Amino acid sequence: MNNAKIRLALRSMLPLLAICCCSSPAFAADTTYSGDLLTRSTLTGDWGGERNDLAKKGVTFDLNLTQVEQGVVDGGKNHKEEYGGRGELTFKVDTGKLGLWPGGFLTVELEGNFGHGVNLRDGGLMPVNTNQTFPSPPTDQLNLPALNFAQFLSEYAGVVVGKLDTVSGGDMNEFAHGKGTSQFMNLAFNINPALLMTVPYSTLGAGVIILPTKDPHAAIISLLAISANGRASTTGFDNLDTNKMTYIAEGRMRTDFFGMTGHQLLGGVYSNKDRSSTDPRLSLDPDTRFADGGKSESWAVYYNFDQYLYEPIKGSGKGFGIFGRFAATDGNPNFMQYFYSLGLGGKGVMTSRPHDSFGFGGYYLDIKNPSLSGPLGLFSKDFLRDEYGFEAYYSAAVTPWALLTPNVQVVRGAQKYQDPLRPNIDEIRTATVLGLRLQLIF
Image (cartoon, rainbow, N blue to C red; front, side):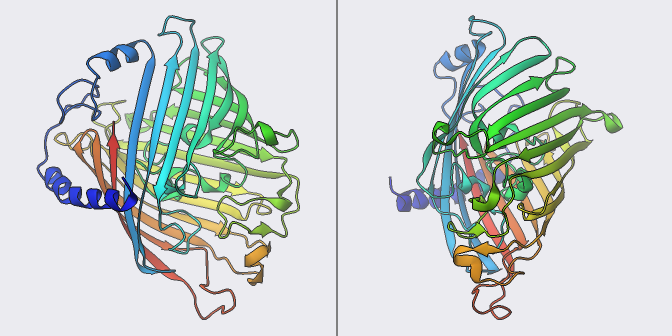
């Protein structure tokens, strides 16, 4: 089916989905592959019981498709509407449950995207549609971003090696995390963007995992050494270089403030890669290069927290609370010197709609203007400005496996001018972006 037919099919479904959302069905609170079409957790169910049996043996298949219709309705660079999507398959094996040996965990991720997003139309550095940026910004990509194996050597420590998905596995947050499929759509709320200049999304790596209390939900420390050249579209072995590495140390612990669940996370990143020829992951142009980035090292420190303010059953993952992120970098070669975000998120607040979620947040990105070569080198020194934005969403569960999410964003982007040859004339105004997301879990 081509993109035009997919778009037509999605649009024809939306009125029906909206009606279903307004009917407020009471879904089962527990997640299970079994059940009838309207109450089970996945569209395809338990596969005649085989899926549940495999899960008991530590073998799981998780497949989802996320489609987004989005447009810049005011301000920004232009007002064209776009449609696109991404599919993701995650395969996991627990060797202990499978009866092989204890403590082994295999993870494989396959994902691909199609269509287009409006990420270059609002004037911001932060993609307003995170879902469309993976596995790589060009469309019609099918890649293997993760293929790794973790082995715990005791109840307190283990090792991991292979191709790592750093977005899914790092900078975790209860209310704001992921690839834009189920919570916020703007990348600034899903991961700490200040890390993207030094931490590849998909790359070869190895590390140590430490569990101070044996419980990974209570506290976890990870120490990783990864290739600074990784891409989702390559194996990574062809450009593996010990002089182009990134080192990450991160710790996350559960807290009990106010008698409710919360988390505190602190991390640091150091890279020895020469940034004079960096291919910026948030580049405004694929051929852009940093002219003043002639440094052989880069660093960043980052922090995030989440805290429930209302949690009817402790540890249930239901309720609402606050979250926030902060990062500080060297400022050169990483031009995103400081980052701040703060917001409110909730999940399953209404007992009649346990699978609904919502969020509202704001972010601020402090930019230290780099000098550029290439097509954007014609800009003046201050061709970028500090960026800030706001986002609000409500994810309504049509069924537990079909989530419909209206979304609104207001972004004052870092890009200042439409035309580098006409500064102060074609200044990009604050953009208002409206979107509708449909996630199907198979």
